[in-house]
Amino acid sequence: MHAKNLFFIYAIGSLFFCIIVSLIFSNTIQIDHRLFSLNTATMAAAIPETFYISHGSPTLSIDDSLPARHFLKSFQQKCFSPKPKAILIISGHWETSEPAVNAVSGPSDTIYDFYGFPDQMYRLKYPAPGSPDLANRVKGLLQKSGFETVHVDKKRGLDHGAWVPLMLMYPEADIPVVQLSVQTNKDGAHHYRMGQALRPLKDDGVMIVGSGSATHNLRDMKRDGRKTVDKWAGDFDNWVKEALAEGRYEDLNKYEEKAPNAKMAHPWPDHFYPLHVAMGAAGENTTGELIHHSWTHGTLSYASYKFADKAK
Image (cartoon, rainbow, N blue to C red; front, side, top):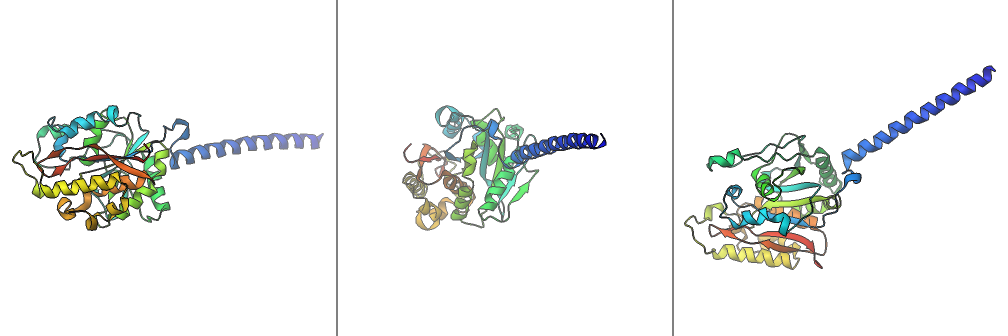
């Protein structure tokens, strides 16, 4: 009788032990999955396309005379209608010596990184939620591809290179947004490789957007209301358009050597490198399609591109 009681107690104890271990193991899997990937149960459709948006001047946020503003406001209707699960945006206004990604919990702060503009611009808000999970995923993918040091900034919000175009594209501010920095101490090929490393995010329903300007020489902008485009700016802009349409990404990676007037078009590369990230993330056998084109001040191109499979 004593032996039977001991066996019974042992059997009940073993059963409870198995149940507890099973629950712990199940929860661990769920936590790990949530931390290091986007939840497949609610995963949006894959987004094979990537985008490069020329955001130009901060006045894009309020100036209805700018054609690019109307283009961005119609983005969902004319360019891409599915709602992304999240957005990774690479802005030319966040420069770091090594890759950095923001990981904000809750609504993102709106950074007013411009000076001397109309007061109403400093009252605009874009409180899109951040996504620490996506930020960690970005960090992991970059490190896996050889970018050893990737910083995570848990406080930085969205600069105007991110919130101005997104405010027009997705005004509800209900899509999680993570921002990635550029490294102006590196070259175009470095940023192209960053894009390559981030390609798997597209399968998770993450839209990858580079935000800069196709030309960005602020010292040579013409403020006399002219409608004509300076030749140097037009030549560079056309070269970029043709190279992207033909899929000549290697030429774009070496644009300072290959493109006409490269240093004039981009005295500093901060606003051009986001294009390289979007280009690298696009994948093999893709091209860049011009989806908007307009000019202001004779030299500032708002050329924007969609990167997609050549067959599409």
